[in-house]
Image 1 (cartoon, rainbow, N blue to C red):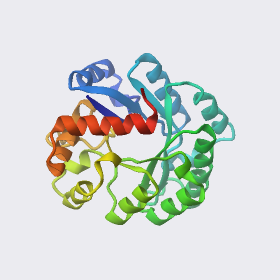
Image 2 (image 1 turned 90 degrees about the horizontal axis):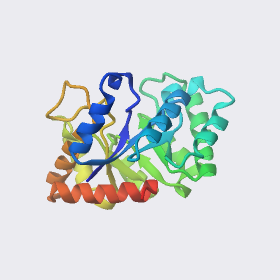
Image 3 (image 1 turned 90 degrees about the vertical axis):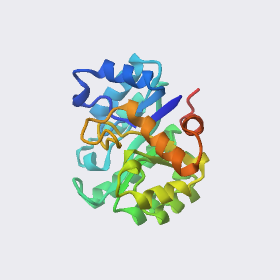
Image 4 (image 1 turned 135 degrees about the vertical axis):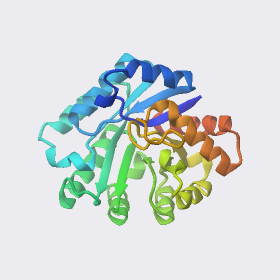
Length: 255
């Protein structure tokens, strides 16, 4: 049974067939889903969705693109949401210097604040980082994020960041990018990552894996990431599913 550790099931692209998408994933062997908050509204939507299904869990937090919108009451709202036992992580949070939808300084300040809130709530953090490797690692160290642990979601950076993340005790989560034709360097990184430190995700509706490129992504396709990892580790897809699910349950404290 698979665990898709990063979905955006509240996305409007699922409004017409969300239940069918979830049913297809369950039929494909997905036992558990995490649906991810990117600001206050999507965090509330994630929690609401998790309350509807016993096998869906939620994260809360503000994506680096959205931190310019943070208001004074948001962190108290997140603290309130975290009282729900379906909330198992804080994120996705981090730094993204590729688009800079929020200024780098705002991103760094809010990243620090959110790690502090996650430590207060004793929730592991889900990290988004793009073209911000040094600042991401530095802030994680300075804010003692290792005390709660976490995962670098949709890992697609270089081997140096992979090593630094693993040295901090974090997991690496691989997405459909791993199946892309131009992702040979990433596959090499995945191949040399200890299997006990690996999670899998779709990041749906984004980053649809081969052979479904061009279609809307959905959680059922997480099996394609498991198959790709199976070929890299020379293991069966069932073993990859079992091991990555064990890792997810351990990190997010899911029974």
